[in-house]
Length: 249
Image (cartoon, rainbow, N blue to C red; front, side, top):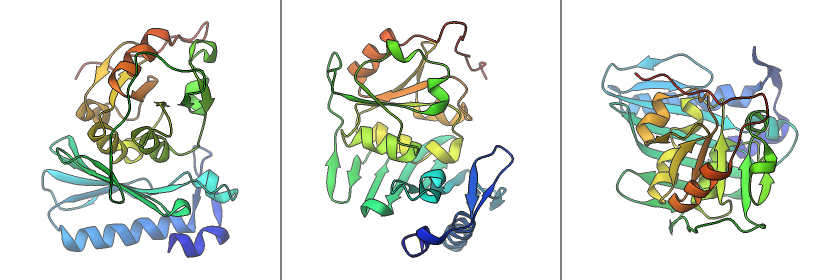
């Protein structure tokens, strides 16, 4: 459905001025229907519609199109994301990137995979000046880009960014403003590839804490452990902008 319709979508502005299309809505309804039929006890949540389904301890978190703005403008980098959260812990993630014909997936404790290839994030004590470091538009309004290493990128899809760190196409990415549906699948893929998570304010976060702190209010880095240490030591807020720290539960 996504491949056949991506070139003829009808976009509309949401309240936050981001785009939603008829394809976003139809895909989410399709995914909800299939998951609901297979797992009737599980809750169903997503970007475009309210919670529904069963009252069990598991919930599916769906982003039917992550990177809708890219798709609307014909930029071929967007993804479909399905994550499973059990008692607050993200345990399964599946991310399809139809423009690339790629499928990323991970199960907690079972590793991260790109189609049939096991993903292991490469690590280093420092960044090379040609390393790709992804920093989204929201984060660039808070972080001083002069304090960041490597070549700065913004791909316009948090799902692609997280999986691309796992696949060593990016050496780090930075999240800010994302909801649970944006990261529920990607953090399973990234963590199972060996990545960790840390904030501009100095907090180290588990995958469960990442979900709990959505929407993300403090720039949060995804990288292999030693690269994450280096990035957290280097990154600084823009003058006059201090990173927020999520309150304790």
